[in-house]
Every structure is written in C-alpha cells, then in structure tokens.
Picture 1 (cartoon, rainbow, N blue to C red):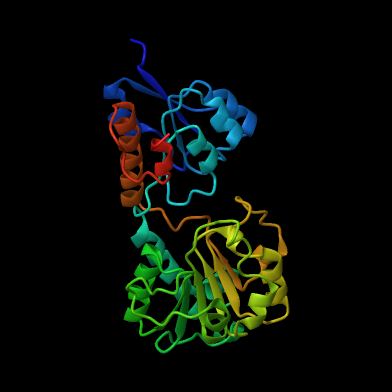
Picture 2: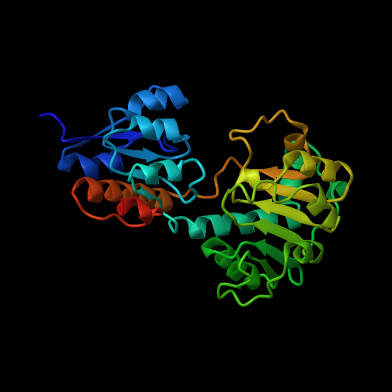
Length: 322
C-alpha cells in the first residue's frame, strides 16, 4: 500500500529510526533519508517531502523553497540556528523544536566539565594514561566551595546548572539580555562585570547573529588568568582563535568545550591539542532517556500536523496566520 505521506529525515545522531517508525508507520507515514546532507542533496530530497525532521543539517531557504508540499519542519533538538525560519514562515510552514528535553543532561555535563577542570581530572587522566604518575604535573586542584560560577544565560539549562553548582557551595552570578534572573535568585550583571568576577564562565545562549563570538579578544582580557571557560551551548559563541591566543598568553587557566564552530572540528588545530582544553564531542545532550524523549516528541509533532492537529512548540506562530 502506498504511503499517505513521506517524511524526510535529513540527518540523525542515532543509529536507526525505529522509534519514529513505530509512531508514524501506523498512520501511513513513510520515512526516507537523503543521499547526503549537502544543500543540493537536501533540495532534491525535500521536493518529495510532506514534512521534515532535521537534527544538525542546514535547512536553507533553497531547501525550503524546494519543499513545495512540506507542512512542518521539526527540529530534533533545542537550537534553531540551522533552520531558515524566516523562509519557512514566508511559506506558511510551522517549525517546531523540543526546548526542554535534555535540560538535566546538559546541566549535569556542564557540572562534570567544571569538576574536571577544577580538580584537574582530565589533565591527570591524560598524563597518567601516558605513564606519568605525578601530582605536581598540574597546578593544585581547586576547592569549588566559595568559587564563583558566572552563567551567561539563565534559561532552563542555566537555572539547572545554578541549582547544581549551589550544592557544591559555589556562588552564582548571572548575565542576561533582559537583566532578569529568571527566578534563579542570583545577582545579574553585564558581561563586562561578570567576566572579571568569575572563576568559571559557563555559556548558555542560543546561536544568533548577535551572539556570534560573544567571547572574543576583549572578553578574554577581562577574565581572570585563573578562570575557566565552559561551553555546552553553541560553538559560534566563542572566537576559537582568540581563545587559543588567550591560553598561549596564560591569560586563562583553561577551557572545557562540548561544542565547536564548525562541527565536527579540525582536531589537528593547536587549540584542541592543548592540554588545558577539555573536549567532548557535542555529547552533553545525550542519554538513553533524553534521546527516547526527543525522538518520541518529534515524531508526535509530525503525526499531529499530518493528521490535521496542532503540534507542541511551534516557534514561528506567524506561519499559521498566513
């Protein structure tokens, strides 16, 4: 029997589509994948799609223009910087995301990086595995209690990080565009005041044109030479060249990065080979529980739209008014 609808899965960070198929196949919805994720390959595939599910692939205006039958674009994640939302809105195509599915995971990962940095876990692990068993190989590990964690962004994840950090006795300082603490209960100051007061600076902002290279040469000069940068948000928030220069000049103690610009990064770059830089491969969002939740909710968003219902988390409500 021919499918009623066809859904393009542009890319995925998991090995199969079983969860999605179990939800969508009974409704006569067939999933298909492109031959690759270049713009040309996605344009070709989008022309056959009644809906799209995308993870990290770039859904450009050309891809959206080619998707003449598309009724919804669902982002398998939180951030929306890889989707041309304005182009979708102009076509009357709603765009959805899942803004709250991995809050605990990213908050846990952020604290794991703070702990790895402060207690020199990554450094000692690397040196010990290389055959060097020497406590004096690194500066003495730090006590977290009494240290200041500067949170740039106090959304769901930033707030969850704050509650975890307080359990370690850390002082919380926030920076938000609105000036609100979003119920976190911490002082909120401009970035120029947060940076010199913080022992750890953790980024929790979306990737936007305004936020690109939010931390660059001037900002690294404002940080303490004993401070660490933590980024589990988006790689484009950080000027990686400026970060490397700050480390080379000993104007920063180190950095712990889970996100990069671009992704995947060129791991041969000297920044990523520096022992003071802790790296994880965009892993903060992952747990078996978070991926099941994400995939289930995205599949249900697709099912809702193709069944004539309204999905959760439409980010461009103006698309419905056209």
